[in-house]
Length: 249
Image: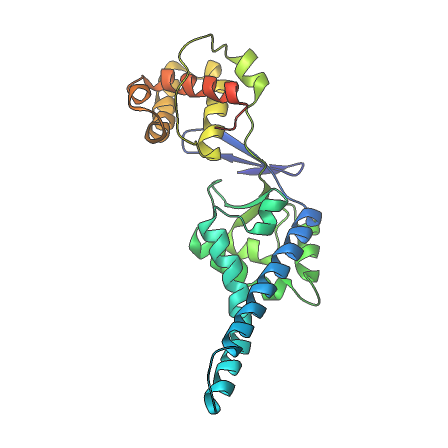
């Protein structure tokens, strides 16, 4: 893993390099504003709903007290659940094209998401994300305190697009079979793009090994006929499909 000029490069176990543009303080700040507004609305709606329950006497005060104490938990839960279940994105992050990833390029797991959000209260000091934004600006990997503790990164995550230059000039794909695949995750699309761009520089043994690993990830999304293709043939067929659709499969 390396960081250079605002770009994070992660080398997978199969020696495929994935490149991500690190998110700066601007977009992260705007995304945080959107998320805090939404989380606050959800928390307020929860309090109002609890107040509307037909309770009497001391139960009313108890429920209201619990609702007020639960507001921070609702806000924390908003960030933790969405980042964990939504591949590293919240509504604000998705709106601004951002994503939280782990050090190996995969979406952050629950533990990492929990840690980075647990420390959000510290990053918030002395006022709205004061310390957090300062660290994002000053640290070479654009990480706030929660990211440093959890080993996570916030990167730009636009809709995956195919690298036309790589597909058309580095490795000619010809006019062979085009694979029929169900919606392919962006991570798998990047692996296909990187392989097609770099396969000409790989030794035959390394090429076969890397192709086998990538093809194993593609087959669950391919039709039965396409899954029966050889490893390299399947990758090329998927690359042709991505080229034809502009990387939106």
